[in-house]
Amino acid sequence: MPATVTKVAALSGSLKKTSSHTGLIPIELSKGAIEGIEIEFIEISELPMLNTDLENNGTYPPIVEAFRCKILQAHSVLFASPEYNYSLTAPLKNAIDWASRPPNVWAGKAAAIISAGYDDFGGGRAQYHLRQIGVYLDLHFINKPEFFLNSFQPPRKFNRGGDLIDEEAKNKLKQVLLSLQEFTLGLISKG
Image (tube, helix red, strand yellow):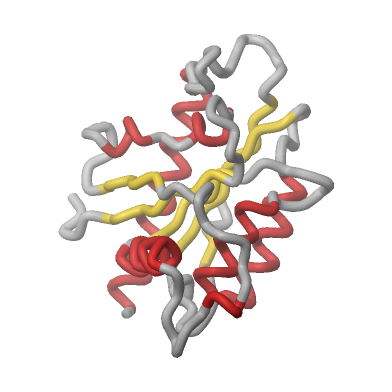
């Protein structure tokens, strides 16, 4: 039994209201299915595009400050990342960039990436690009298990509202969260 509640900040790189990536974020697993884990979905759609003219003597616009504070308070981060043009989405990259402005609030955090797409490697190239970005930001990604979901392979994975309904995928997500929790607690104990 974990002595510390692992606080996970979850970000979806999709702004679509019924996004399958937002539907991948397993909020229900933090409500008793996994002991000692708390997932908070962090909205990124209202963040302004990164513009250093918006910075004022080391402070940021209030919505950016609130976002940065939520990342800072989390122990780890769960990225639900669609793949656009072999990379991550502009809204997700924008959020990453705002939180990396001095001081970098990503530094030292554990992280995991989940994605869905058109094939068995759904979102994989975006995941690997995000891992590259994470090296510079001092994010520590779990290596296994990896989570790529083929959204279009039967049986149906999501309902019309974008919620994940596939039990096998939910079980795989649970394994990702358990790995993230273990890795996070290891980093905290070394901290």
